[in-house]
Image 1: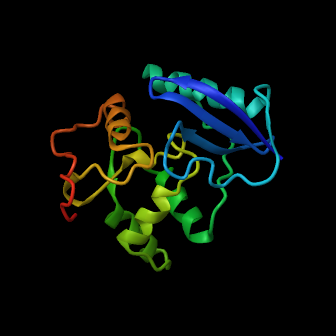
Image 2: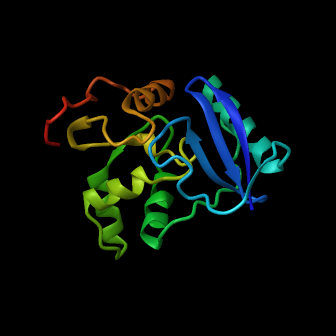
Length: 176
């Protein structure tokens, strides 16, 4: 059984899911792969403690205040995706990295990885914002690959104070 609640944010409604102990999903309304990791019964229930912890974190994040400790997170995915999502949690607030750099770090730790495979795992991150997949950009600063939409990725990076000077949205049909 998964429990569900909603959070009103500057990006619109965020949908959160929990197993009762940890956050297992956070999706922006209408994003790609919305609720893809949920299966079985769900119940709307806002009184789960981890939802309250997530709301406190999100309130601070969107207000630009010091962030409290993350709530417990339990994303569901393959071992490769888990390894990528763990690396995402290491990207500091207000900074970005590339898919290629993440792939290199995985290879250095003995995990076969390409930038494209990392991109697939980043795109399937079931806990947006809390696991900061928006901090990953393409080579040369391309703002690509955000399941919630590039404009939302830009909003989150600007909120974090990322220097947007070298970052750009590639034109449709442009190879990365």
